[in-house]
Length: 193
Image (cartoon, rainbow, N blue to C red; front, side, top):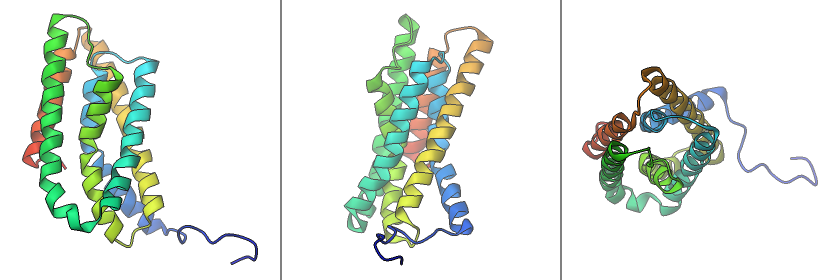
């Protein structure tokens, strides 16, 4: 250590550890990608991009931090229940989105709705935070990589969903709602992790 310099928060991270954490981040992003596609189907604008990037990225940081903070003792209790609650939240939001868009313009893209979706699909990150806190993986680097990968993949999924919606040139709200319901059922049943 150099005199007068603070010790680093974490030791340097090897390329292998970076690869492992990136793979974990990719696995944690599967439901975020599906939600991003669903949010983008009914049209994409700069406001939606900013909201999704900010909210999903924030949830991807906050969820593992909370998970680490809660600790190992609560992990067995939260594991199954977190997925079930997240799944039910997505089913509700998806059904509401499909019903609202049947009646008129899409309104399932408010900050409140996007926040609820972001929290629901990042519940797995909360549970993974327990394991992360117990592992030898570097916590700060892991959380940073998870947040970056999740945010980038979700924003890309929103763009792809927007292109699909434009190509079909119809209001894709019902399809968006159906995708959220399907992801919610998958989360609740433990099929999507």
